Length: 190
Image 1 (cartoon, rainbow, N blue to C red):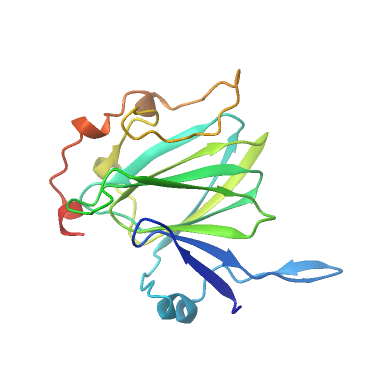
Image 2 (spheres, one colour):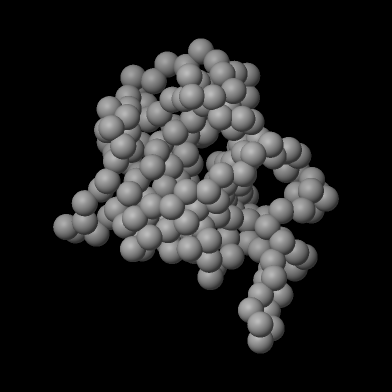
């Protein structure tokens, strides 16, 4: 295995990426992105911004996207445990409306690459979680969109334990369902 193991999911363009930590008695070192290795795997993106969030248990952020200025995202969890989800919104895609999810923790050394044209969200499974994501386009507040996290047509299997409260932002409580979603944007070109 090289520095990275790129595993394409059932949805074209969506990758789970396993890093290779170099460990010794001091801890470990790991590359999380290398342009040459990613390009060899067919991932020819350029990141323009990196963001970090910290959330408590039960927080569900998403499902978010930008309409006219879509973002590809390389995400990882650096503290705690999250269930990360991507939903294909690319018009004309054979997997339109399908989702993929992966559990991310610091100890499993996994990252998730979500290309442009997807909605993205995550659910915090640990007491707290710190989440990093590098994006291919700048965030524009007036361009944000969302889908309802628990849309019965999406059938996302969120790992919410019985009795746990899901904590949402006010905007995430009122996002539309997929069947109500009509997007005239660059997604149609992706």
